[in-house]
Image (cartoon, rainbow, N blue to C red):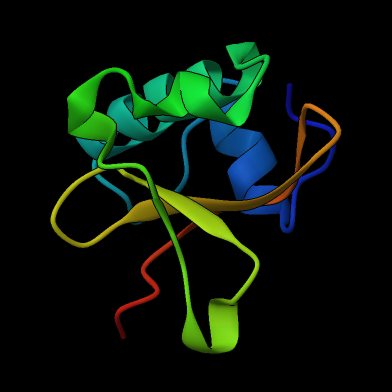
Length: 94
């Protein structure tokens, strides 16, 4: 379950609202990933579907995890006690 968001834009997407400057299809895919994250009871739940490409991050994002939204965008988060914290929709490749 999502316990906290890192920024207000990610919460806006989760709440089903649109964001200026982002494609509606991209927002729809991001919302689906956020819904899957919110439904997860254990971190292993995020390995399915395989298109999530769920993985642990390293470097300056060490201790965080990511699920893929598209080639560029990810939903990143920290995981503890069955909850996702500091959830963020971001392009961490830039």
